[in-house]
Structure formats: structure tokens, C-alpha cells
Length: 158
Picture 1 (cartoon, rainbow, N blue to C red):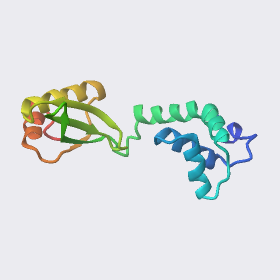
Picture 2 (cartoon, helix red, strand yellow; picture 1 turned 120 degrees about the vertical axis):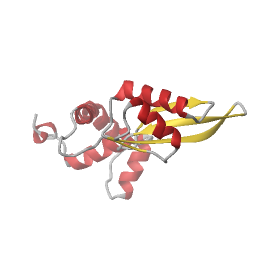
Picture 3 (cartoon, helix red, strand yellow; picture 1 turned 135 degrees about the vertical axis):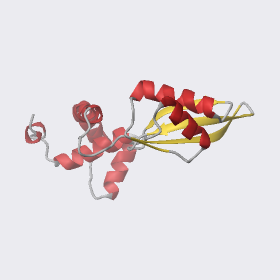
């Protein structure tokens, strides 16, 4: 399918349509927020136009994104995970929230534990690896628990 065939009957350029739909999909914005943001950029459209574009082109853009995630470009290493843990209070109890974030800023996996040790880090990493496979590289905050967990799972080279 060629892009010029898909956007043939639209007066607006394909770049603007893609921008509006991607803003609506990628960020937690309402249709009116997208309309306001585009108006600030000098693009005057209604929220109903954004809704129509989202219904028409949203599934196509989602397929493109999924295809890129499933088959990354071999010359460009995208698959980098950033691992961190933060203190959170749940029902007055201090717990640790472990997170894995990918190169696009998407939270891949989150895990809550009572401890901040090798056992918790290993459980978190096994859970993330089972769901998403092995990353090309892993960036951590140099917590010793990560290092020992990565050695135990045989990911010390990442």
C-alpha cells in the first residue's frame, strides 16, 4: 500500500495526519487537547477531525509500530533496558517498585517486593525476560543486587 493512495482524498498533508494521530495514541491526551496543541502550532482542525483520522488511520499506524518492535532494524541496536527501583508506600508500608523501561520510554515490567536484594532482583529479571526476551544491553543504577542477579541469570555481559 502506498502512502499517497491512503491519503488521496484528504486536503491535509499526511505528516499532519500522522502527527495528530500519534499525539493522541502516544500521550494521554483528549481529542480536544490534541486540537489545542495543533492549534498552537498553526494547524486549525477540529477534535472531530482528529477522531475521524484516529478511527481511519490508527490501526494502520499501530500495525507499523508493532512490526518495528517485532523486527527491529539489524544495523541499529534498539533493545536497551533501563532498570531501576524506587521506594513506594502502599497501605503505610514501605515497599520497592522495580521497573524495566525500554529505549522508547515504555514501561515493560514492574514488580513490587518487600526486599531490595538479589532474590527480588532475580525474580524481577526472570519475569521480564520471560515476557520480552533478552535485551542487547541493560543500564542499571549500579545496585549490587542487579550485578549478582545478572550473573545468576547469565546476563553479566549486558
